[in-house]
Amino acid sequence: MILNKKNLTPLLESMAAGRDVFVPARVDGVAKFALFGEGVECAFDLVNTTMPPKDLLFPQTQKMYHFDVDANGNYRIREYDESREQVVFGIRPCDMRSIVCLDEVFLTKGFVDEFYANAREKLLTVCIGCASAAETCFCESMGVDPQAAPNADIMLQDCGEVYRVLAQTPKGEAEVANWAAFVEEGDAEPVACELSLAVDMDGVVDKLEGLYDHPIWENLSIKCLNCGTCTYVCPTCHCFDISQDMRRKDGVRFRCWDSCMFSEYTMMAGGHNPRPEKLERVRNRFMHKLNFFERRYGMSLCVGCGRCVEKCPVALDITRLIDDIGACDVVPVAQAE
Amino acid sequence: MSGIEISHGCAKGERPLIPQVCRVVEITQETPDVKSFRLQTLDGKKPFDCMPGQLGMFGLLAYGECMFVVSAQSDEWVQFTVKKVGLVTEQLHALCVGDEVSLRGPYGNWWPTEGCKGKDMLFIAGGIGLPPVRSFLLYCLEHREDFGRIDLVYSGSKYDDLVFKEQLFEIWPNEPDMHVHVSLYREDPQWSGDIGYTAPYLETLDLGPEDGNRVAVICGGPSLSRTCRESLVKAGFDEGNIITTLEMRMKCGVGKCGRCNMGGHFICLDGPIFTLEEIGRMHSDV
Ligand SMILES: Cc1cc2nc3c(=O)[nH]c(=O)nc-3n(C[C@H](O)[C@H](O)[C@H](O)COP(=O)(O)OP(=O)(O)OC[C@H]3O[C@@H](n4cnc5c(N)ncnc54)[C@H](O)[C@@H]3O)c2cc1C
Ligand code: SF4
Ligand code: FES
Image (cartoon, rainbow over all chains, first blue to last red; front, side):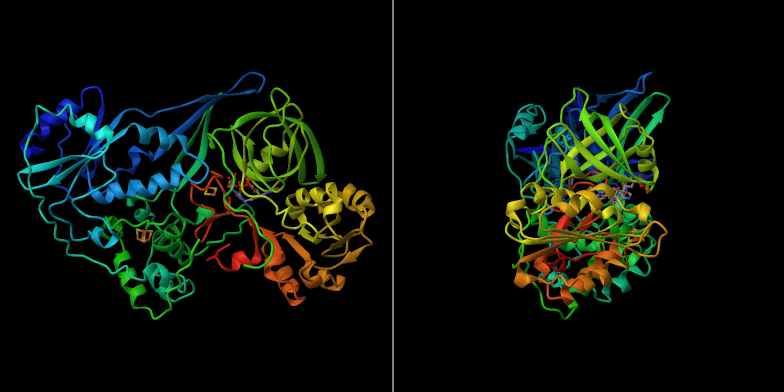
């Protein structure tokens, strides 16, 4: 089945009836996923957005529940479910891979995060493959195929004039059944995407076992500003803080994105901080991406989207770190969980 | 792997971030800045069942929530012992019996009560480190025949800072084959007992590894943990027979919010209880 690119706008208009459809767009100069509708110009020319789509599943600020305090000082909790049917249209394969990682974090290991789970269940994912890559893309080295996303409900492979449509889940099949007016029978050949940036991950996870106290981290962290940009633009970073706001007798408990690059993140009562310097924080961040997550969930937490490479104000570059690790003369340790 | 086997990542639960509203049914002033709170659900039941050593997020909806070890439990209540150190704990100290609080849990792993069966137990704690250890100690006393000799080495900076004084000085010393050793870090007009920092004091007691048959449990601040661990290793203890509980800033309690990691492990979910041998194999900033 193929979808002519000319039909994208009418298709989106039909999909947006009764549902929120998010598309890549430039809003006030920032490329991000925005609600399709008047005044929002789809930017399918963008390889990837500056802001990742993770906020559709894990909003930057999310109310968890309300509470009131009555005249006797007694509490009542009122639950809150903000989740609703959403479509993300035009998400890229690297960002689809990030959802595999987020699913692991929020849905496994004994506790299901209901806020994420509710949003996840109601999200339809329509992935558009990449015919060309940005200078900073290195997804292929991280095991992502720029023209494939096995976990997307619908995959649209870029074939130049047309997309090749693959309904990959029952939800995707049900959706595509409504697309008859926009698609046609036929097949097309996906354009081969050429990436200019690559890293060699061979042995990196295992070598990192022996590099915890290596000068590599000092050299890397020395220029870091601890601004947190890399964590906010990262599609897999998922740390959050929990806090509350109380106005008179009406309160709300919410969570919001946090960053391991900030020293308060691990600051404990009494002033002890296990990661007091940027050395420890930078090391923890990159170890988490390249080793800790791999050991815990069997996959890398870096998907090769290149956002941090592009946005870090001091050009701290994970691909160069990977090169440096590869060049280190240490014995790789394959450590089983 | 040698030494005591500990379960990790074994807590499970539904709707982990939503607390239940509970009521404070009893408050004990343990020291000038430590209080114990017994909590029940609003309809008078025990809020949750848990294993000794497990954790709860206890707090006030309007101020926030903090992680504490369940320091004691019965069929009707769970108890937390709280030191006043910051924003939320200060508000908790202002609570009265009958007040409502928020609680979620249980989280984390538990003391290896099975794995320690038949062993001599050496508990080492400083200051507010005793409440977490107490749940294990109480278990040993309840199942006295399952354990050998029990030693408790406890210290604090002032007499006033010692928690659970009644148990320390009246109850526990009279338990069969239980030996309580208390020291203060410096002289105190209210104190005529031993003086010394925990580690050197521990060394004077000459409690050896008994050919691997003695298990040590340490709970205290970073410097107490480090020095006592060095003393024990020097005395011949295998690191697999030294158990400790780790602390890190926490928010979610269920391995999602990210902050309490030690290498690829989350202290809230996989811990807080580990052997030193396990910690030695992790990439630890803690
Ligand atoms: C596994 C574990 C068991 C603990 N058991 C006990 C106990 O039995 N008794 C006891 O008195 N204390 C215990 N603590 C420490 C207790 O959680 C902190 O003292 C408390 O969170 C401080 O909160 P605060 O709001 O008063 O301090 P603030 O400095 O105002 O902290 C603000 C917030 O940061 C977080 N935070 C700060 N310090 C810590 C910390 N050390 N650990 C976890 N979160 C922190 C909390 O969410 C807190 O509300 C334990 C901590 C952990 C991790
Ligand atoms: S974006 Fe760059 S400077 Fe900012 S915290 Fe990340 S690595 Fe450091
Ligand atoms: S407290 Fe959130 S991961 Fe441990």
